[in-house]
Picture 1: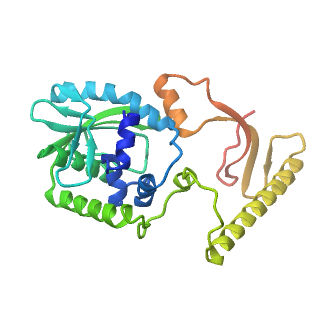
Picture 2: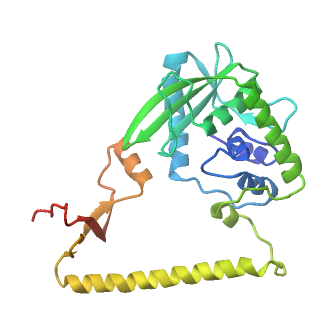
Picture 3: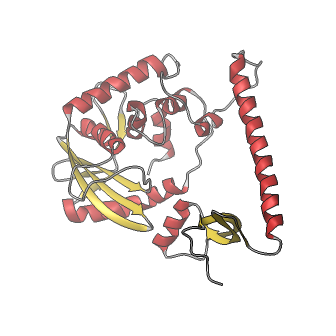
Length: 301
């Protein structure tokens, strides 16, 4: 778990979790997101459910990993010699001094290989290489808990050190720090996320000049959204009026229902299944297209 002191240190350094974004293999953030975190005063990031679950699961994953690798020392911090990389370690295998990364993965867009292999997602491989460079180790380990379809699976991975990848990471970090952080210049071919941009602490000042198309694009997008919402509401009124006091509609091809549906954000569903809790599901009444009439079986009464 990253402490406030470690977080403050990260502003003056490049941390291990920054590396995938800087290299361009992170599905959750970009190099420009990282640059803004270094160069701007930011509102603190509120921990998400995924972040909190990752923190809570770190110790059980390490304890399980010890059954495979032997005693693991928790935590630690090492600098990659001659760089701005200051790596916070999840752990270190005492026998051999190998770094350990711990991951809780709920993102279905990435693939993990079989337990005991070296097949980890690129973002994990890059972050682990930061730790291997800091430890001057010829391999590193990953302990992962993956959640798919409500089931949690523990796996471990042994990843060999790749000198070419390590040099590539060093070059990217050096360029990022000297050309973008120190000069406060936006990263080329990289966009900051809306979440990051809204956390920038803004100062009272005169309006800054910008190209007309920047304002026009926002204005047209907003008007299109408002028009779409208005049209959808009007269409929904038509649907519900056509249902009268029933709970469904059909035409030659489609079948719609207006029924109570139980659901929650995916992360909450997975967490509830892991915890064995099902009674917290949110409930809403929604219009759903069940199937094409030509192949459908209507729900029984």
